[in-house]
Picture 1: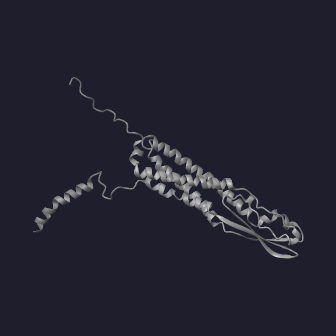
Picture 2: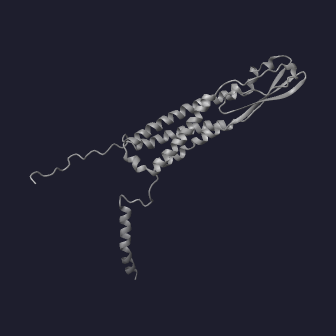
Picture 3: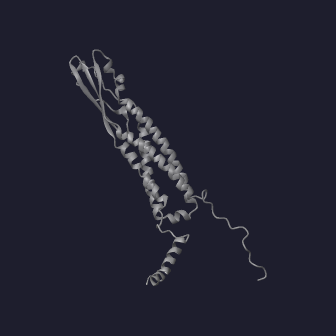
Length: 254
């Protein structure tokens, strides 16, 4: 009985063994292509421009004079951080002998902020287009010799621009913190006129702006890593196969 059952199962066992041993057989199914996953990671660019472009905050000081004690004056600021256009709330002209004058914050950091946000938006749109190409038309991508090289150049340029834009924005953010911090009192004329006095009040948290810098450098790392996967698709990494030397020639006289 057992011998009959073993003999009936042996053809199936042999076919399974031959299937496992077959070089082109993949029992785990198709492996995901890394090109299809990289754009999914790079959409973190949306977090970079959202945390920067959506920011708004305020800074405040407390002013005192013989007839006024600790009057709070606020200045609201936000993206694109043209601080030199931001004005503190006016003090009542009847107070402090009308010595308060219109006072602005110091600095214009719009160029760095707008460059960072605009570049992040364009990268996000490029990621969406690349994702469609990689997932839906990968056979056309690999069949065209120039497309991978163009993609490699664009990827390297984007990685470089992430470095430049994020570094510039990080420097601008440092200056924004100085211009909205306690150092602003040294720029206010009212605070230097006795018997007036000023105390720094508070400034809004800039945690989301710090996060935008982190996402900027994270995108730099992702794009630099993606450059390797794109490079593997080019002929620089996989040159076209050369014809085998010493091939058999057709016999003459046939």
